[in-house]
Image (cartoon, rainbow, N blue to C red; front, side, top):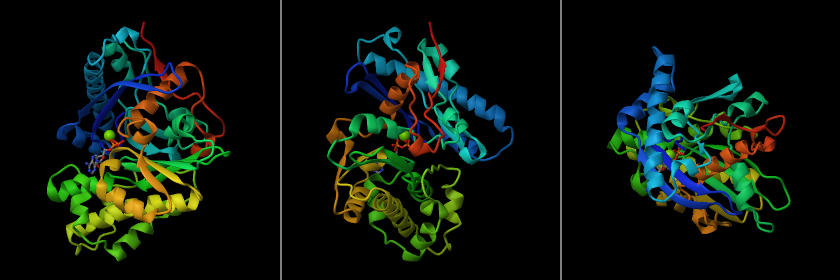
Amino acid sequence: MSGTSLDGIDSVLVDLGRPEPIQLANYYLPFDDTLKNSLLALHQPGHNELHLAQAVGNQLARMYAQSIFPLLSQTDIAAKQVCAIGCHGQTIRHRPEHGYSLQIGNAALLAELTGITVVSDFRSRDIAAGGQGAPLVPAFHDHLLRHPGIHRVIVNIGGIGNLTNLAPGRPASGFDCGPGNMLMDAWCAKHTGKPYDDNGAWAASGQVLPELLERMLGEPFFSLTPPKSSGRDLFNTAWLLGRLTGHEAAVDVQATLLELTCATIAQAIRQHCAGAREIYLCGGGAHNQALVNRLSALLADCSIRSTGALGIDGDLMESTAFAWLAQQALHGKPANLPLVTGARHPCILGAIYRSL
Ligand SMILES: Nc1ncnc2c1ncn2[C@@H]1O[C@H](COP(=O)(O)OP(=O)(O)O)[C@@H](O)[C@H]1O
Ligand SMILES: [Mg+2]
């Protein structure tokens, strides 16, 4: 898995042959600045972009392959014993309104380099059936984390924030809430040179700017009725700059961005998950203590913990979900939740590149 944050690749080796997935090993391979900048550039129209997208896709496939071998070497499992790699690929355009979502990463090359079957391109079929193609992890959350009597919400805070609503006796719902870490990361990198604001310490030293927050919350995406999904196509540096007067102190913008992430998640939970009692966080944002504190204050009537409390390390949730999604594809089982994505019907997700 490599998500919208563009931080790097999370790999996990999972045994899905039991009722609960067993995470046997994991490995994190960060992107260097050159690759991150190439990927960022590909989010916008640019000169020779078709060639560049394919070339960077090949580079990504090599990096995905490079992360498989250290993963396997932590165990005595050989590549030949691995059923499949579920490879999300790197999103460079997410435009369900235009009928596509584009992930690069050359799955054929990854299969060739590893000798392992690869399942990729998980989003296209759902979009072809009229859906958003996202979010896809709610089906996995529903499969694994539902409680028969307790209303739970799983909140993934990656580059984008998304949630899964697991109300007892009702089908799972879920959607993207808005920016998670993405805007905070971009602003922090611009002003401090660091890729992210460790523990939200910089944000916590600033003041929330109410007028700026209000301008940001005026974004129509926040009040759209689900199904809805988003990405860097909407929430990017231009979006942020368009809401600044230019007179704000950088640290106060960071404080306001953290508040935006927390406020939009809390608002989404209040509006769409009324009665929720337990909130479980996953994704990198769960490490941001200032963010977790603020979210806990905004949702004081719920308990807030990491998904680690349910047995799934929050840093491995999405990568484990894509292993499960690959298994669904290989078994010919549907894996989208039409209520979540808006697709007309359940679909088998993913393209399969088989290895002998
Ligand atoms: N200690 C930390 N403090 C604050 N933010 C953190 C910390 N650790 C990770 N993060 C955030 O998590 C992000 C990575 O989250 P991740 O779940 O991998 O997102 P994505 O799925 O979009 O790649 C980082 O870019 C950073 O913003
Ligand atoms: Mg990541």
